[in-house]
Image (cartoon, rainbow, N blue to C red; front, side, top):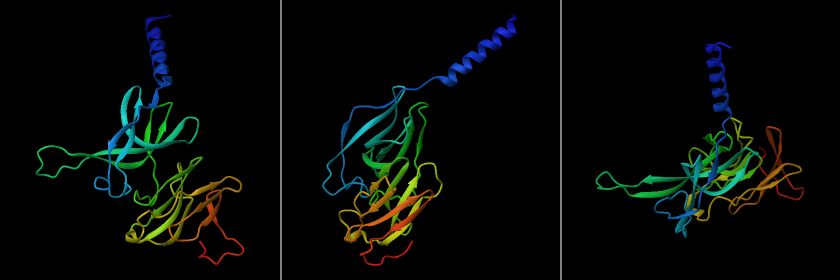
Length: 225
C-alpha cells in the first residue's frame, strides 16, 4: 500500500472516530442561591428566599445553570429549565450585583452534548407552569398584550402549538397565586385538563396535531374552540 493511500486511510479513521465520539452529559450538585421577588418579579413566589440550581456539565465543563426537575423526552434527550445569573448593577454602580432568575426551557442531547432552547409559544414565567408528557409541554400562556390567558400545548419539534385556546381575560393584580394550577395529563384518550384560577376546569382531547374540547353532559355551555 502506497504512502498516500495509507495517509488517506488514517485520515478517514480519525474522522470516523471524531464523529462517533460520545460525550458525557450530566447535572452537578445542587446549590442554594439567594432568590426573591425583588430579583425575579415574574418568576419568584412571594415567600421564596432561595433557588435550588444545578450546573449542566458537558464533558466536565459548565455549560448552563439549571433549576427544577428534569423531564426525559426520549432515552437520548431531556428537558430542563435554565437558571439565569444576571447583572443587576445600575450604570453608576462600581461593581456588579448578580441576581438569579428562572429562565427558558432547554433540550439537551446526551449523545452529542448539544443544547437548544425549547420554543414555547405565549410562555410567560409569571403564569406558565409547564407540565410535560412525552414531547408535549402544557401550560397556561399569555397573549402578547398580557391581557388574555390561553391554554397551550406545544410539541418540541413542531413550529406551531398543538393547542392554543383562550381561557379568559387576565388581570395580574387579582391573581396573586398565579394563573392556574399545573395542567393534568391523561393517557387514553390523550387528554389535558387546565384549572384556571377562579374558573371551572376545562379539558381537551389531543388527536394528532389538533385538540378537541371535552364537555361534560351536565356542564354549562362553554365557548367553542
